[in-house]
Image 1 (cartoon, one colour):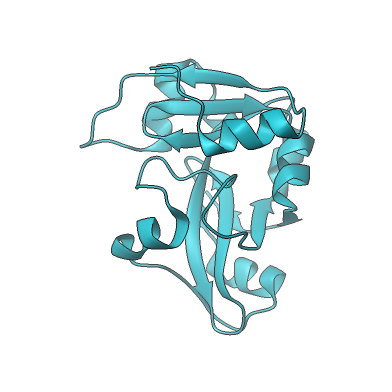
Image 2 (cartoon, rainbow, N blue to C red):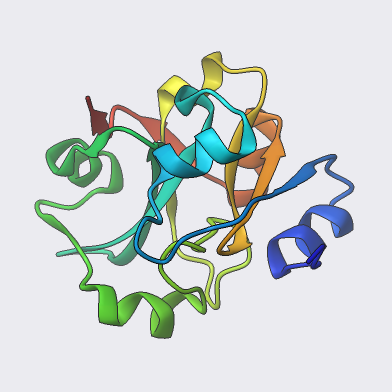
Length: 158
C-alpha cells in the first residue's frame, strides 16, 4: 500500500523524519488499541485524533492517548470555550477530508486549532494516523506538536 498521504507530504516538505507503519485493518474495529497491537506499539504511544466543536471557536481537533477518553471540560478550558462537543461522525469527513479510523491531525482540509494531551511530551516516539485506515505515522512528539502548532494540556482521562 505504501501511500504518500497529505500528512506524509507535509512532513516531507517540513523535513520532519517519520516512519510509516502499515497494518491490516478491520472496519468493525478501528480502535487505537487494535492499531497499537497490529503495529507493535504500546498503547501509550498511539494517539487518536478527535474532531470537536467549541461554542466560541467552532471546529477544533484533539489528540489523546488511544485508550483514553476525551476530557471535554479540559479541552473547553484549553481551547477558550465554555462548552465543547465531539462532532457527529457524519461531519468528520466533510470537515477534515479524512474518514473515521484514518483522521490525522496533520493535513486536514482546513488548519483547525489542534490540542494535544500533554502526556505525549514524555514519549520518545508517538504514533498518529497517517490519514488512511491501516497506516500510522511514527514520529517525535515535539515534531508533531510543531507541525500541527498544537497547544498542550490535560484533555484526557483514563
